[in-house]
Length: 201
Image 1 (cartoon, rainbow, N blue to C red):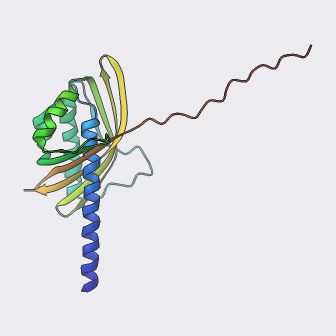
Image 2 (spheres, helix red, strand yellow; image 1 turned 45 degrees about the vertical axis):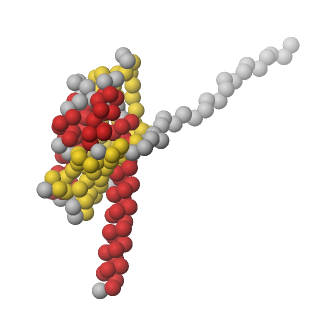
Image 3 (tube, one colour; image 1 turned 60 degrees about the vertical axis):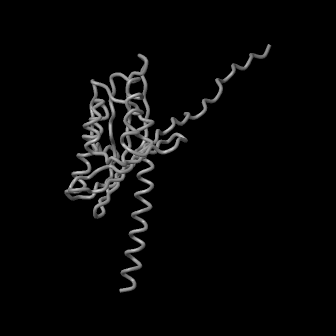
């Protein structure tokens, strides 16, 4: 009996820590990420990496995957009400930038709308989604690629997001979003061009 209590306590602690980490990741993505436009496309759960672990089976994971896809569609379309359907009123957002977290849906919306106004012709592609339901809490991770026009110029970025969900009244709601842009890594340095050796006189 004592072993079961210790195992339960360890599992509960691990779940809490993972949830906290996921919440931080999802928040930053939503803030730092580009906004949506009328010409948007959402591709969901594109498992392009053959080594990516499979998504756990089950109706909860399927519901969460569908919720993520619909939330991202609302994000691209600029439909705040469509997005809010999947976010808790007391959601927290953390970005990859060194900024204070945003607490509450009502505080996030004006920031989202201001960022979204700068982008045109947006496309957001989600890849390698992994979802872990655990009772009435779940977390999801995915990578994303964003392509758009900003001030008439092509704009692209990549990143990853972690979302933490809580099942409330039979619905999975995002309670934390941590989204981070992955900075482009410089390519390998090119060796200097070989200088021609002068011919001997």
